[in-house]
Length: 42
Image 1 (cartoon, rainbow, N blue to C red):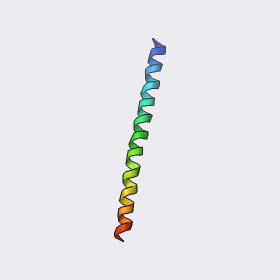
Image 2 (cartoon, rainbow, N blue to C red):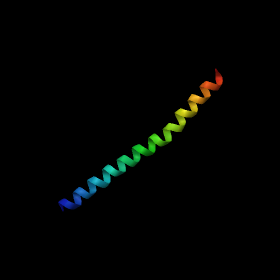
Image 3 (spheres, one colour):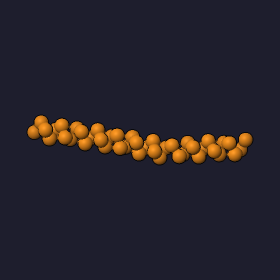
């Protein structure tokens, strides 16, 4: 039972990591695009 709980915690933290990585991966091109648009206007 304890082993199962630990397994659940590990998979949960893995999902958190994937979620964080995925979010930053999607946010990065957005900020990059905004920066390029600012450069074009100047």
